Image (cartoon, rainbow, N blue to C red; front, side, top):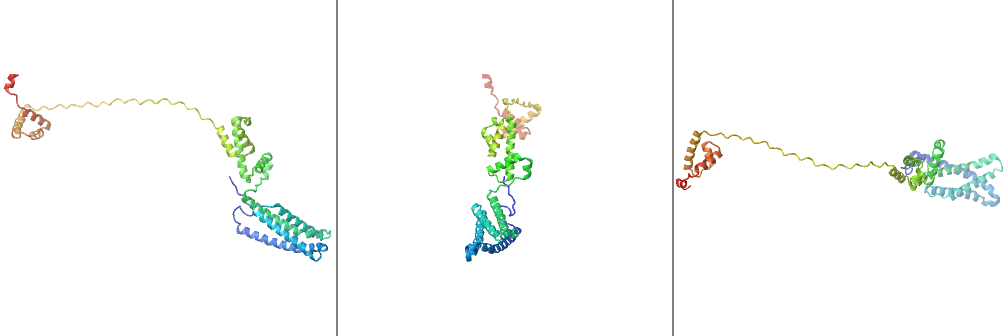
Length: 325
């Protein structure tokens, strides 16, 4: 979880708006005017103070000091912008500014009003430089992820001990985002509650040592919470063995309904004799006739025609064969 902090110069990585650029330009013009007026007013005072030692070359002292201050301040601001601050440059610039203030105050010869007037413009110059340096450092630090957000004062008042522990973890483990630190603290307390519910009050002696260390120092919380969730998860209930599946009962063969036999209609003998006579006549005329054709001509079924053909076409047993039997 990441969070972005808004600063007077805008969000990191986002260019300044038109209004912000306008205000920065106005501030730069005022600073240039302040630096010019302060240099002009300081030049004569410092030259007069340095004249007993430098003579005609006394103008070199105020010019060199002012140019040195501007050079040191410019390089210090540039290094702050590049996230490569060099405190020695800032300290040297402050030292030269203090020397300028002292020389200007010495020119007042002990008069309080003159001392305040001589020191006012150098102090304003230093204050403006420090404001610009703070803004640049803040913007560069947020972009690089090295500026730590502050904890609200209300939290310090409501929970001073827990807030101190939270601030300590932010400092020790380089947590720069205050919302990110709050989320980490909530996850840590959730893991502590799970361990307390699972092991009881003596969870520190019963839980694994690595988990206790991670939760105590507030490090590797993702891994710690995953381990705690795995340890405190309820065991699944034992599954009862399933009874063996029985084969489905075989279905009794379905009984086919008995076919109803249709009684054959008996043909009257007179009709049968007439048909036989007609059939004999047809067979004599056409010896190769089929039973179906014979039944069609006699207006009977093909089966009856075949039977009639078989019976009439069978040769009659001879009398000699009857005697022999």
